[in-house]
Each structure stands twice: as C-alpha cells, then as structure tokens.
Image (cartoon, each protein chain N blue to C red):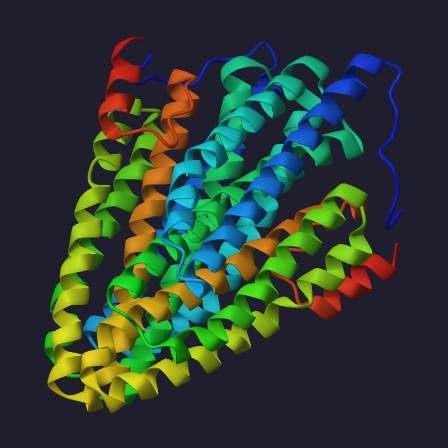
Length: 238
Length: 238
C-alpha cells in the first residue's frame, strides 16, 4: 500500500481511539501551520500584533504534544496494537516532536520579526526569507496532507523538496554576509535575518522528518538516514 | 522512586530484552559523547584527522538510532509492556532521537573545525567555545549517567544546568559580533564560530530533553514545557 485508508478493527472503540489521536495530530499540525504563517506575516508585514498571537499560542502547541503522547501511551497500554497500528502510534509520537519543534521555530521567527522591526532592518533583508518561508510552509502543508491521506508517495515527493530549502538558506546567508561586510552597522540586524533563515531551514528538516514517519507507517520501512533515491527504491520494491 | 534498579519480570527473556535495549542506548550515548569530544578536540587542537574520525563515525550513530527503534517496536509488539516498562520503551525512543541530533551537532562542530582551520581564524574565537563545549559535554555525560542509574534527581540537577549554556552562548555571540564589527574580513570566520556555539547550545537542549525523559520514566510524569522549579515540585510531591 502506498496510499489508502486505515484498517478497521473488530473493536469499534479501538478504531475510534486511533481516529481520535490521528485527528488531534491534524489539529496540532493545523495550529503549527497557522503559527508559522502568522510568524512570517508578522515579519513581512511588520505586524507586531501577530508576534503576540504567535507567542501566546505557543503553549497550545506544547499542550498538544503532551496530550497526544499521553494518548499514544494509553493506546499502547490498553490496546497492545501490532503491525500497522503500532507503526501508526510510533509514527505519531515522533511526528508530534517535530511539530512541536516547528512551533518553536515559528516562535523564534516571530521574535525575530520584533527584533528586526526595532532595528529598522532594511527591507531587502526579507526578500529571500519570504520566498523561503513560503517554500517550507508548503513543505509542512504537504507533509501533513500526506499524513492525513496516508500517502507515502506524496510524502516522498515532499521530502524531495528539502534540498531546495537548504539551497535557499545558503543563498540568503551569502546575501546577508555581503550586507554585513558593506556596513558593519548592519551586522546585528543581518544576524537576526540569518537566524530567521536558519529557523526556516530547520522547519524544512522537520517537515522532511514527518514525511519519513509517514513512509515508515505506510510502508513499514525506516527510511531515515538514507538518500531520496534509496527511499524511492524502497517504496518501489514493495 | 527517584533512583533505583529496574523491575524484574517473570519472563527472564523479557528482562534480558529490556536490559539489552538499555545497554544499546548506553553504547549509543558513549559513542555520541566520543563524537562530541573528538569534534571539540579537532577544533581546539586544530586536529584535522579527528574531523575525519567524527564524520566517518556519524553513520554508526544513525545505525544505532534505527536499530534501537526497531528493537523498541519489537518489544512493544511481542511483550506488550505496561506501566514503567512501557514508559522505559517510550523514553528510549525519544532519547535516541535526541542522541542522534547531538551526533549531528558534533558533526557540524567537526566540519566547522575544518572551515575555521582553512580560514585561519584567530585563536581568541575559540576561548568561550571551549568552555561551553566542556559544559555541554558534562551535561550530556550527566544525562546519560542519570539514565543509566535510573536517577530522576540527578536528571533534574543536570537539566538545571541548561540555562548556563544559553548564557554562555549569548556571551560568545556578543564577543564574536565585536570581532565582526572590528574588521569585516573576520565576518565569515566569526560566523563559523557562531555556528559552532549554536551547535553546542543545541547539545545542551538535547541533554536537557534526555533528562526530562529520565524523569518521565522514573516518576511517570511528563515534565516537558514546564519550568525547573515546577519539575522539582513534581518530583517532591511523589
């Protein structure tokens, strides 16, 4: 199976529990997407109210992580899942760690928006960051969509977009270094922009991790630490 | 229980399996400590052979993560552990993710050692980094020791050292910015030193995460996202 629906169980209660935890992951994912979107909007539109929104909602992201992990542990203890059910639960406990870290990165971006506004950083600093932000937001959306649709092919496709975010990061870094060299008074503001780009690059990494968990759950194969080409082969040899 | 030994089971085979996976985590931890030590030595002693050692052994760290996760999933499927056994397995699957990331950070530090050597970065760049490196290495060692000894009080003590690594990072960053402003030709080398400090700060975060998993396993309480003072209360109210 590369895409599909979840298996059904004799116990409808168990079906219900798995569906419930899955839907909580989706809700957490939706919140994290919103956090990232608001953080980037705060940056590009110089909207300081959005900074407060992101910082204020960070605690909700954390609560989701704790709550979902607790639910996963309860399912493991009570239902003693096997095969793909067990992989789903394990994939979820890993996924939420990455979602929570994306939430952290979104908060960092929001705080940088505040710093950059205070330092009145020149607008050109943001150009590449905005493009990169859209790229990693799309990656996150794609990863969550692959999770929702139980689609390992889609997950592979999204994972394949990660190198582009690395390239974008390197390009932004180069550009920002030229600003720093040009005028040392720009250094601290340019560094804030560097942190922002770095945070977004991390978001790309976490989105790729989520894709790898989706592939693990669907295909039953651990595809961490192997190249995209190898992952493709792993999926095809099913 | 705040310290103690692991419970024994009627099935000696199960005891054996849990002990085996625990000892693999310790072996992985030992390797990651060694990687970090070598990466820092490469940096401070300008030893480029150690850079190769660290990069070469990164694959071993990754293999441990995949192998231990597989073993944990097998234990969950076959043994259907409950209570503290289940918490141990869950704590292990989280711990190894952080250990693997520390391995990644060690590799980054090693690569930066190479970059800094090529750029002939001035020695003062390393001063704070060396001290910070020792601090986070001690944190990692303490976290692994708390894991081995099943000691939540020790874990709390180690987690309490994390803010210091944040402070060290901020101090190093400030110092490096002054070098950048002084002479823009220093900017790229100083930035490499910044990445190194940042990597070490992440090591401190991961070590704290490991401590939180030890507390979760021993105390049965999820202490992520709460302050050190609250964690202390959680442990005392046992």
